[in-house]
Length: 492
Image (cartoon, rainbow, N blue to C red; front, side, top):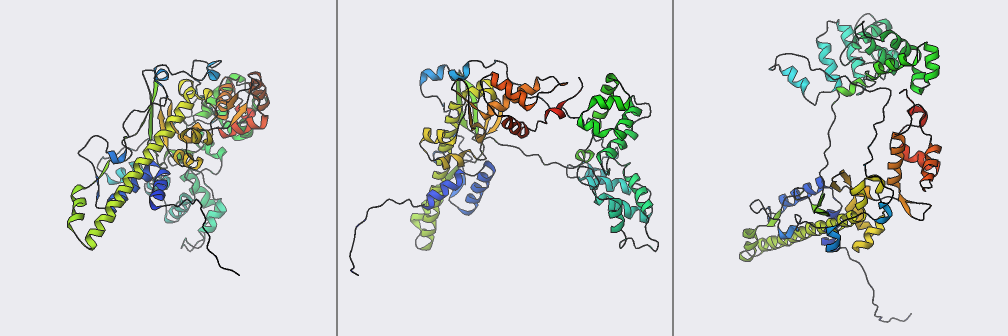
């Protein structure tokens, strides 16, 4: 084998630390970005928050400047929707219909009266109170023997956050065999009796073993002179399956009630709550902070970054000047942190610029949505935006993940504006988001006595030139949490 030297020219992409940092910041959400910035401030003494200057720092990018997505001045004066979508779109906005279910809770939790200085009341009225805490508080106010109190504690511990009892009486009895500490064994009748006492606690319907028992408990707690109480109790006790399947004709025949009477009965049932524990169980509210604001000014859609999502940073001039005065390890430490601070500020500026470019192009593509709503949403994929801003699709995917845009129509994730397309008979394209909006509009206007089936919706869309398969309609309907036609049937 002969040894030789050869020259070879090749291209290779090297992930420098600066590039890795820029990519990491690009895909962070607003909350994660704030945490990353705070971590950088804590670890780097040369970074500090610019609290004196109200103007955006140059190293952090001009996040407050108004940037219009239009390309020319003539387009900025009169922004119009694409001609393809300008024809046949109603001026009135599609209204999201509220899907009525059989059960609509209308009752609310009443806080018990008491001294405002009572610590127990303050603890219970806080938002951190769980359903078990609420039930234990009522148990402490009830007169029970030690054995009954032990049974009640076991029952309360078996209640789910929605208020439903998941364990059977036999399971509760088996769990109390070794923990009662009593010389006499606990009987099943004792567990059932204590269960009935717990079912009288607030909220009404708690500790029920199934839906029928939950509704019956609430009906029994209503005043005896409540209108339609007796026929409603009879229907819930004997014909709940027919009520759930909305087979009203058979329900009226078997319960021997007229249509007008059934309407009044349904109104009373809708005041009940199938999940009473939800009124007590704490729920964590999640707030979305938009990264981009979109507004219409003088006929043009203006895009601007949210200046409040991240603090304005700057390099501490005093510490930076110490690098020239120190020597040895101190000088090296300051120079390294100064370089890291500059890289971090540059990465933040790059993130803001990339987010602005992508958001501006999305607004430019989806002006129809901003003007007319979901029905005017145009088909859009990552490749379209990547080609327009001359970036890779992976970069666009990072930018649009967990980033939100505040528009006059609400707050949307940037990924919401991307959707697949369906060809129309006229040779155009219709986005899947627009098809969902049309399906929702058709169902909102349907006759509640004869709801539209998926096949009928397919035929109605075909009349508008949109060819969609029935299974696709069913998939979109299920994604919007719209029940099938047999479950949407109701009396007017």
